[in-house]
Image (cartoon, rainbow, N blue to C red):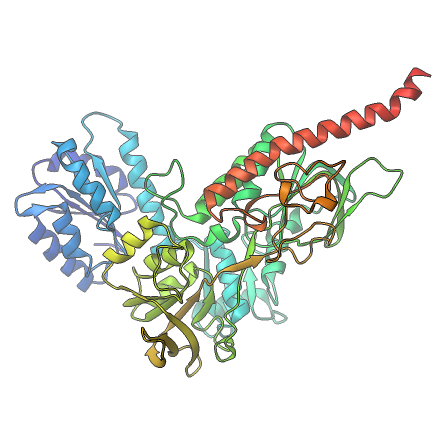
Length: 570
């Protein structure tokens, strides 16, 4: 058997049909058959002993010694990262309710009807998506288009790896003294500085940071023309900004999107979003963001990545009504602006842990580091959906994952489907009324101090071994750069519509529902006061804001027509 990852096909009565259907994957995967639950366990034990990667277990539901769920339960301790698909040949409706509940309990990834004719592409679409998710999150890229070389893990290196992962770039990271790292350094020449990036066009970037990398790989080939004019400039390329870009560009507006880091925002770091409309098997945040970006590009939107917006100002008197959007090294003239910069993760504030940023301590879901957590205990701090998704993803690699929350439960802050999956995942534990207050280690994180609030009101400290800490403890709006003329609420979120103070209303009328105190400047998504902090809600606001932009542009055209009408009449 070669180095290709394995697809295990557990089938008995429909063996010929299923082997024929799976034959199309034989170029990239080794197809290994099994005929029963016991046979599947024996085969996988042998594969694991030989060091093979198991990508997918596809099991016919009705087997002579059990069913597909028995297969998955027996194999999960052996290959926790393998994807699991149940195949239903007969009595589909009789089994579908049981399998639906099993999917909610994290017992399988998908259930599909066995094809009964030629070219069942819905069946194969589901399999390809499942294999693609495994390849992205578990196997890593076969061919790296971007290579990162670093001396030792630190916060900057962790940020670079996370950015590459969220940007959807096939990449690999090497320490400088490794054979691979040495080869890249030799190719770069004697003046190379670490960390070093070799980009997809075989250029070298010394002293790399996220901002430098984003501009070099995206912005460097497409500089912003001086005083470029757009109907709408969208600041931020998370779900709200991407949705606004798709709808604005598709409706004929000259659309520019500016993103300082990775396309997708915080949502782009989610390993699997299962409750987004239209994706019954779920979709990773990275893939959702990249698909939206491609969609917006096809409609004509322009993206400038790696450039933070520093200020927004009204055009001076005598110029047509618009806004000047200042980006590092450039100025864009915008008839309307949509602020969709989202939020930034809140810091824990434990000084002892700051030294381990990038060496076991990570802000965000740290999907780029998940494969390195094998054999470790990982603590996830946070009670929101992002924390739940991160914990479930890490549980496929780590020996144990502990979710730590200050509250007395998860129900108030996390979706029920995630709570259910967490409850059903054997190596995930939830510690309530608990917070991380310290930690340490020799060169990388090795242990954490937990402060536990007791039922009687007392508090005790507990030290636990931990090789990883992922912090998702809430977020603050990313709007420090937004001018003070755009009003905020007490938590610094941007106010829109009737939430804008009445002394900023115009002629006694409030701004439009998503418009800020500044005419023509709108806010959508997590940065806005009162937003729902959900991916679908942010995308909905991004789509909705485009109608308000159209109304604003229509008013500008009417005002311009009124201004020139006397001259035209004369």
